[in-house]
Length: 129
Figure (cartoon, one colour):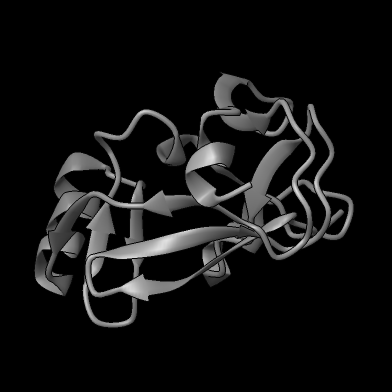
């Protein structure tokens, strides 16, 4: 399957980790491109403004600019887990890829390591406990 094929099997539902999360209804092999992460491409200054003034936590960094995913249907619901099953990699200057970090079974929640220091202060996963 290609990324577009996997994305149609990703759905949002209540998460045992936090609020809502994104889940797969099919098995996804390690290394597979699951979905393209796209949104409003913004500068670092605009990112800081949106985080501070709008409490926007749905922003990804692609190395040069930031991608605000607040208006997306799915990717904004991806939750943090230190022992994650997905990773985010570069695609182009306006988007990123969500890929399978390991084999993922149907029914699993898709997770990433948010990768910023403050996340580990409140993380309640088995690795941080």
